[in-house]
Image 1: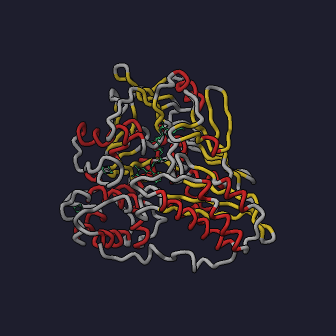
Image 2: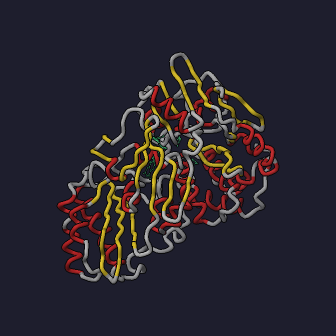
Image 3: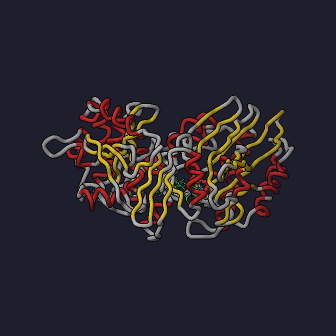
Length: 494
Ligand SMILES: Cc1cc2nc3c(=O)[nH]c(=O)nc-3n(C[C@H](O)[C@H](O)[C@H](O)COP(=O)(O)OP(=O)(O)OC[C@H]3O[C@@H](n4cnc5c(N)ncnc54)[C@H](O)[C@@H]3O)c2cc1C
Ligand code: FES
Ligand code: FES
């Protein structure tokens, strides 16, 4: 099969091809500089403020879904196969979109710098018909959009007003046409855009990826670019060879058997949301607090693991659940316990030309109990200071086979092996032995000490999180240990 040499996308209802761009060109620069579509703003340029939010329409299970994306850290090539929608496309002063009209009616914009991004995040919510237009849902959808001057109350009021109306607009009318155009883009050929000696490549199969990365082990793999994008915009790193994983058939799969899940490395956080919620409500909560809607629509589980960060949110719960990591290099596939992937700070068990292909996640046995909690400075859109994830077998009131995994406590995500040994076989109501076991955390960890949290604070938090989990497992009711209705109770003031 041949190779395609231009990306193909829908822009303003038409098929557009773009070629001859550099591998590190961002979608925001393309929109603002090449197209002159300056309605989309550049604020932080690191995925935090949401000013650059646009909607990318993609087929998900055959249905067109509009996902909010931070254009500043999305590479232009990653728009292949999508519909790009910006704030200019959805309405204008004489014929505003319902979201735009309500923003104006509720005085929800002052300097207006944040407004295009907020409108586009809400445009995506407008098209997410299953999501009710409640204050809680709107707050969650806007967690990745900062406003410096208006205050959030009028913005959220505008959103609730717009979402209470029929959710139909010009894009609803054109949905079928857009879906068939997007369907026609699925050509299953490899994509390579070369510019001088540089390339942006997007293989279409796992075999093609293995071959290409084997031939170019010096290339940078890019999945959601929520880390890599910042290397470009903030570290000004040159990346002459980019291999994007977003078109690799099967790398975003989620399969399940009676006993396990197989999650493809290129699965985004959003793709895996339902599976995680089905495993445990604590895991659903962790998932909902990773970044923002924009970050979760692009960021992948494989990327979160492969970057080796000591404060990535997915490794601790996946380790506590007994996950294995599947890696592929050329034809060779191997699987290792996830915790063994993290060798030391900045060093992982991965060879040149090797990539993460999937995560094998066993379904917890019925007598296994699981708890996990993330502590960060802000509730939303913030990196963890400490994340603790714990699982135990609980049989006849006795704890056994504990797995206690922490993020933020060492140079890598790490198990608390001494504490695990101290808890094995302890009755869940033996307060004295449980307390003694908690003190073992002092032997397990010499925590990180940085601007996010001091070592002393991290150790206190690690003990408190495990103590809370043990208290709940021992029978303390969750009305004493959990904040309920936190989001619903959020003040309406800005
Ligand atoms: C605003 C913002 C908020 C964030 N909030 C959080 C948060 O709350 N919690 C959290 O944990 N993280 C957070 N992050 C970090 C980031 O979202 C995650 O680390 C994300 O999972 C990275 O995935 P990605 O697909 O975007 O990776 P990319 O940026 O595409 O890649 C990251 C690294 O992994 C490598 N890589 C990617 N896929 C593979 C693969 N299959 N095999 C081998 N190597 C691979 C890349 O080469 C690169 O080195 C945040 C980031 C931003 C910008
Ligand atoms: S400019 Fe701030 S998120 Fe993109
Ligand atoms: S209106 Fe000024 S930043 Fe939101």
